[in-house]
Image (cartoon, rainbow, N blue to C red; front, side, top):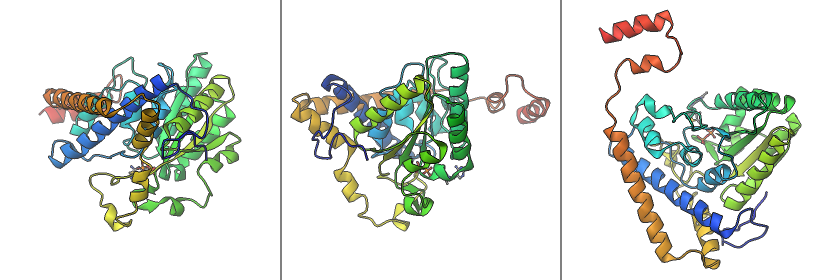
Length: 339
Ligand SMILES: Cc1ncc(C[n+]2csc(CCOP(=O)(O)OP(=O)(O)O)c2C)c(N)n1
């Protein structure tokens, strides 16, 4: 398993980015955690629908977005808000989607991010299609698709991996192995020794990285992206991490894992280790931490304000999202809804 930064914040390899860039990525992780905690709090206040937290997975997501070009596609899941935001999806739209407004699923035109997939695994094939199209058009862009360990048991994973490999599509498959698919532990998910080893069956590189190590993730995605752009096809990256919170706010992890199971993973917190590294490099201190946390809180307050100030959607809207031209059966249903 590739590791560059230990939980203690010590380097055991070559950092893929300089200190200045690390500060900026650490600030992004702080912002991501602020969003996540706000999401949990707002759901408990009844202001958001079900929320799927990603606490503990910030390095996997911010680290995966860091090496991407502005045009690279991100095709991700309900748990990937940080990854989507880091590629341009505004926080207020991510909140809006959670408020239950479909318009939260429509990013601004210039943002190359698909709406989050709730269907486990279904989006991987879309990513391969986008990557294939980019290749046919001769565009310098890749598609990065993110999914969980459970998603690798879906048929879509096989179809996406096989097609991507056979057609050398410029794709990066990022599995955030967070230990569970709802209540099902990773060990019961597959007999494969690792998720990364599944790449062998498709004839593509598979790498396992410490998913709580920002540098390891950045490094693996950088290499995979370069390889994809060079025409060498896809890479499967398994980022080993842990879901510190529940599957969603509708889940009670006490029913399937010991209360103290997350404790050792808190010691491996991706933010703590990046902070330790930056403090040792004299690039971060208590004051910078407070300032960044305050900024992040303000950003989230503003984002939810914007989402909640969005005027209610018209009933027409739910019929309009799927087709360029509304087919007759939907037009009929729209008429009934209006009546
Ligand atoms: C096709 C499909 N089957 C089942 C579900 C219900 N479901 C939602 S999340 C989830 C677990 C997914 O686990 P994993 O892929 O490991 O991702 P994680 O939630 O841990 O990020 C399941 C089974 C779904 N949304 N879609």
